[in-house]
Length: 270
Image (tube, rainbow, N blue to C red; front, top):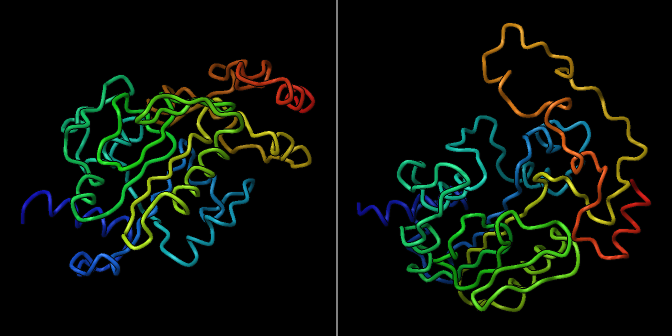
């Protein structure tokens, strides 16, 4: 089987969990693909995986009515490399993105390009973080680099535009608009709907600044861990309260991008 066809079947099967014979069906019968990507949170941040703090009813419903992975492995969990792995189906030493520093070679084969060849409409909206322009997409609107939570810029094929508002809401509105108004409803689609949240710096939206004001957060079991009997990785991590939380993480200074109304709400909360 040619490599391209193998990657296409793998992408459709893994992302949609549909039978392989669906690839041979007519365009009207082929499954639509919505790839939702949240950024930088642990499994226990999701209710379906046992969160005791966050409430994630919509994700929990997907887990309940679909498939919930209990034993999943990651190829490369760093931000940009993980995206390159997902797009190409290749390990980092083959796709060229080892860290957040490399520029993604967007000329290489990706599953959106293969879906395009198979007649799919493709789009990516939200975080990209691969330096090069997205390819293999009929429509793209992506954050430059990490982007900002408040009043973010978006890169497009026709230039960069600034938006007023909170990035999660803006990405969601753009995705819904593309689904409702910018695609051919008679042809299959693949949308990569990719959030910045909850990546550091942790800057909640205006409507969620006081979400946990009346919630008692349980003390983590590892809060006073002395790493005895642990491997070197536990000691070398950069996740401690004492050494690795910055003034922005601790809400000691507001985000630089806030307008006057947003700043007033932020200061009232913090």
